[in-house]
Length: 219
Length: 259
Image 1 (cartoon, rainbow over the protein chains, first blue to last red):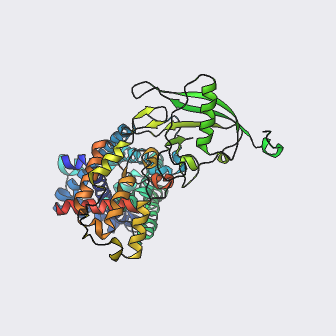
Image 2 (cartoon, each protein chain N blue to C red; image 1 turned 30 degrees about the horizontal axis):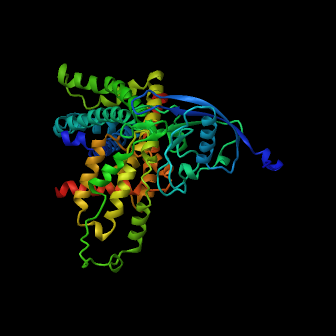
Image 3 (cartoon, rainbow over the protein chains, first blue to last red; image 1 turned 90 degrees about the vertical axis):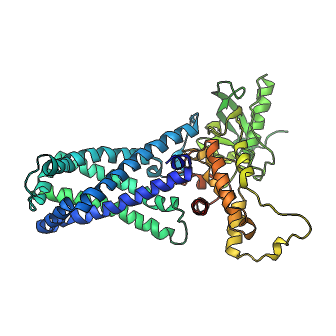
């Protein structure tokens, strides 16, 4: 860990790896959630499996939470280090002349996503943990779809979710291609990675926003 | 000599806001100067020369700034002009920047390259010996000059690799990448030096030690972390590509695996 924190390249590789891990998780999360639009039964089956499978609950879930915490803590640590490396600030700094806003403000988009995760955990993860491990209520494989739809009956929540997905899109639009560059991948396939990154950065958040709006309109 | 009438219309009056700092330990501040009679054909450094003539006539200490070849080769000039390293033009150093890029009545902010590892010595002059120390850590190849050394031209090198190595070697070490990066990262400079040798057979013998030692020195100097904004590539007067940073990352990871 100490060598990880002392090397600029290892730090960025660690950020890239945790980012790629979170992007894979996000894709899986989206695939499950989109089924809620087409079939309550399939969504319930997926959710019940994810919510009761021991491997998912006690191995993958802690790894995921660890990945999320690492990515955010490292992001803040890197930002503090980078501010220190500048020292005296410029009186005039024209960042927009040479780099897009999203790449210069990953901390803003990241902090917005972190705030959203607080709400998201409060909405879904906390009640789930409470249901299963605190109140220890009887298993009900058909409750998940109803709980999901119930959350999106509230317009304020839907608006907050959609705004958060917009910031997620901004974060991913730089993060996807950037993670490959950090891993040392910059070759003839880079334009393809960048196109895939744009597709992912727009498609996944747009899909999540669609799910929220769909359930709000159809509850 | 009278100024031709056609030229009079082009002559500019400028307001210059320049960072003044007496020495490395003094507290600096932005000072405002008015300068008349600036020709669009002047280079930026010639404009600074005219300002200094004016300041000396007024009994004011002239503005200290780095310069040497004044033809974009030495990497000495290092001003941060209107929020950009080497000013608003692309693929040029400050000495190659011309006043035609500005217009009459403009206010121009001129600051030194800012980074913790580039401390200000005086006014616009900064200490960039951190780059020298990085270079000393591994930016070379060790070749015996006993008389039995193989002629470099006799070693076949793929054209694509030779071109990329040459592109990397055009880095003049001016520090614009550090100055412009929002994180004050030196990755573009170090990666250009690493790539220059990593792409050539002569550089393979010391490749592992080179990348490890140069990155270690870069980190010890206190440069920031690269976040792939790409600003360095845009502002680099020699157009050094981000591809070099990816190559350095690969070299570094591979060197760590080899131990």
